View 1 (cartoon, helix red, strand yellow):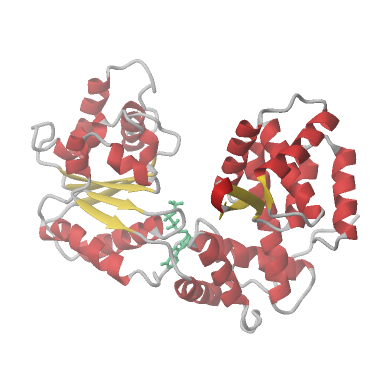
View 2: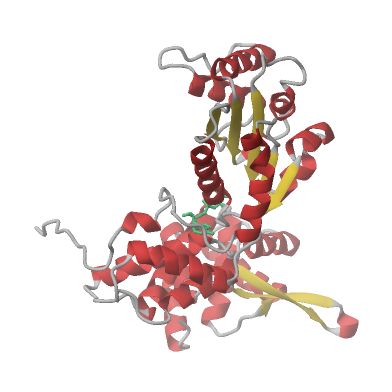
Length: 408
Ligand SMILES: Nc1ncnc2c1ncn2[C@@H]1O[C@H](COP(=O)(O)OP(=O)(O)OP(=O)(O)O)[C@@H](O)[C@H]1O
C-alpha cells in the first residue's frame, strides 16, 4: 500500500489560500475602506455607533474588510481609556427569523451552561434577555450580522436592536449593527422603518476586475507559495477567469489553490498554465454537478439534449431542435416528455445557472427565437452527466459522436 508522504514543495502556507485565513493586508479596496472608516468614526469619538449595511456579490471582500477594520479599530481604541468596546459577530446563515438570531446572540453572550432553549419563549422575552446581556457588557458594542438576509421577512430585531437605547431598553450601552448581505433584493424588501435604521450607512462592494484580482493573488501568493513557484502568466490567468465569471476573490484564490494541488500531484516544480486549466475544469465540473443536483429529471434531460446537439456539432441550436433531441432522450429513458413551452423554462433555468448560454435571434417576419449552447466545456458537462444520469448507453453514444466530431 502507498504511504502518506508530506508534500511541501510548492506551498509555503496552503491555508493562506483558504477560507479561514485573515489577510494582514487588504488590496484594492481603498475607497470602501475610507467610507467604512468614516462610518465607524463615532465609535472612537465615544458617540453612538452608526448602523452600517454592506452589500455586494459573494467573494468581494465584505467579511475580510470588516474583520480587518474591526481589528484595527479594537487596537486603535486601546489608547483611549474612556471607551469600553466590544465586537460580537454572528453568521446568520442557518437562522431564519429574528427570534432565532436573538436566541443565538443571547447564547453567544451567556456562559457555558447558562444558554436558553431555542424555542418556547415569547419573542419580546428573548429580546429582553438580549438587552440584559448587552447591558452586562456595557460600553459600545458592535454586532456584526453576516449573511443577514437569512432572517427573511421576520426582521423585527433589526428594528429593535439599533433603537434599543432610544427606546429605553438599554441602560447606557451603545449598540450598533453591521449587516452584511449578498442578496441585493433583501434591502429593498425590508420594512421601510427597518431600512431607515439599519441602512443608516450603506457601503457597496462591487465585483473585482482582473487587475484587482491579480493584485490580491499576488499579495496572497507571497505568503502561500514558495519563491519561483509560479510560472509567468499564471496569476493573470486565474484573475482573468475569475473576473470574467464572477469578480470574486474567493473564486480566484480557489483556482490558484487547486492549480497548486494539481501541480503538486504531478511533482511539478512550478504552478503552470496547464495546471490552471486542469484546475478550472475541475472547478467547473464541481459547479455543474452542484447545479445539476438541483435540477429535476426533465432539467437534466434538457441539458443532455443540448450536450448531444453539441456532440453532433449542431450547437447553438433553437429550442425546437433541442426539443426534438429531448423527446428522443425521454423515449429512451421511458419518461413522458413535457410540452415545448415547459422545456423552454428548463433551458432558461440552465442559463441562469451559467451552464447554458443563449442568444436571441431576430428573424424578421418569423419573429424572434432563442438558440442555446453550452457555456461550460463539453467534457465537464458530459462527465458531470455521467455521475447523475442513468442513461448510460445514450451518454456513451454521445461521447462516441463527440469523439468522431472532435468535440472536446
Ligand atoms: N481586497 C482583498 N484583499 C485581500 N484578500 C481579499 C480581498 N477581498 C477578498 N479577499 C479574500 O477573498 C476571500 C473571500 O472574501 P470575503 O469572505 O471577504 O468575501 P465576502 O464578500 O464576505 O463573500 P460572502 O458574501 O460570500 O461571505 C477571502 O479569503 C478574503 O480573504
